[in-house]
Length: 321
Image 1: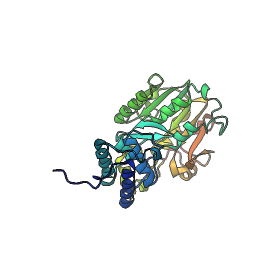
Image 2: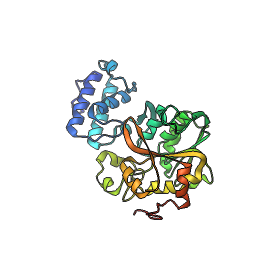
Image 3: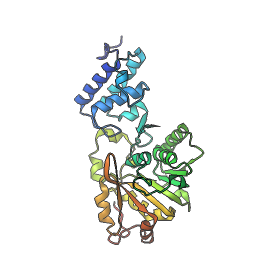
Image 4: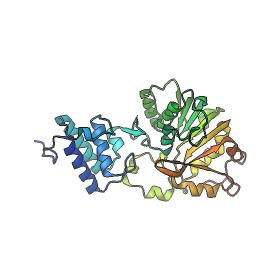
C-alpha cells in the first residue's frame, strides 16, 4: 500500500502552487535558472508541468487537476527539494524572452543576457545601433552553443543569415540539434563539434556571439548545489574566469568580416577583463536584467589583439592556470 503523501487532499492548481512555495521557502533553495525566488519557481514548475502558458498563472488557479497531473506535480516539487536539481532540468524546458527550449543535463540551462539582446531589438538602429540592418546580416556564429538557444535566437533576429554553432561537447550538440529541429531552422543553422573556432577553417562572419565559461576558480568552489548539476566545463574558466575569453579575443578578428563585431558575455568579470586589456575600449551593453556583463568589440578593435596573439601588452601570451 502506498504511503500517504502530504498532497493527497489537493485538487486545484492553487493547492499545489501554495504548497510548492512553502516547500521551497522552507528548503532555502538557490535560484538563477530562469527565476530568482520561490514564488516564480513554483509558478514555472506548475505551469510548465501542466503545459500551460508560463506567464499566466491566475486564470488557472482554481482549475481541478487529474490524478495523473497531481502525482506528476508532487513528484517534481519533491525532486526540486530533495535533489536540488534546477527546475528546467526537472520539467525539460527553459525560456528566454518567451521562447521555449528543451533543457537537460547535456548542456547548460538556457539563460543569457545576450539572449535578451537578441530578442528585444536593443542591438539595432533604434537603440545601440551596433547592427544597423538586421536583414543585411548574412552570417553569424555562436561559440559554445550548448543547447543551441543563442544560435536559434540569432537566426530569428537575422532572417537572412546562415548561422554556424560550435560546441566541444557531443552531448550538448545532440540537444542543440533537437532544439534546432523544434524551431524548424535546420536549413539555416549548422552545428559543428570542436574547440572554439577550430572546426570552422577560414570562415568569416558578420556577427560572432559568445557566452563562454567565465566562472573563476573561487566561485566554482562556492557554487550552490543547483549549479553543480550543470556541466562543469560549461562554467569553469580558470583562476580568474578569463581563460576562454582570452582565446576568443585572440582569434575572433580572423573570423569576422570587416564591418563585423563580437558580442560576448563575461558576467561579473568585466573589471578583470579591462585590467587584463587596458588598451582595449570595451563597449559595455546593458540589458533589462544586467549592467556591464556583455561587451561588443568591432572587427577594427579586435585586429590588434589578433596581431599580438590575443594577449594585452601587459600580459602578452599569459594564460591562467
